Image 1: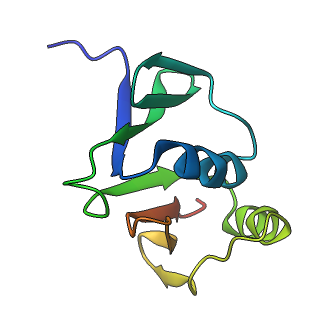
Image 2 (image 1 turned 30 degrees about the vertical axis):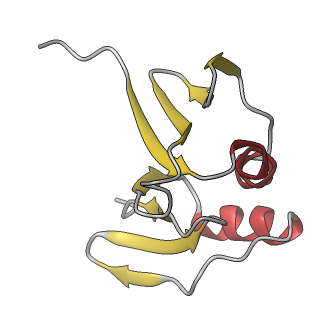
Length: 113
């Protein structure tokens, strides 16, 4: 199976509340709303989806790779969002944040070589 793109998805109870939060998180509004209950942010072949599914809301996890944890931490703080403390190791740096439903997002900065 050749993969030409991939999306992380989180399930939420209230799409509009989540759109407001994720707009702050990503620093931009969503690219599209392809169907009722689905909102998408796109970045090249990767993307992020918010899907209305109240029964599964708060049980999703996603990892987003970033270039600079310090830069993302600063940008998020300016938006009123706060990452949990950094965890560092041979894997690089990770930091987590929970959305309003309790979905866990992990930002990951790979090690610099």
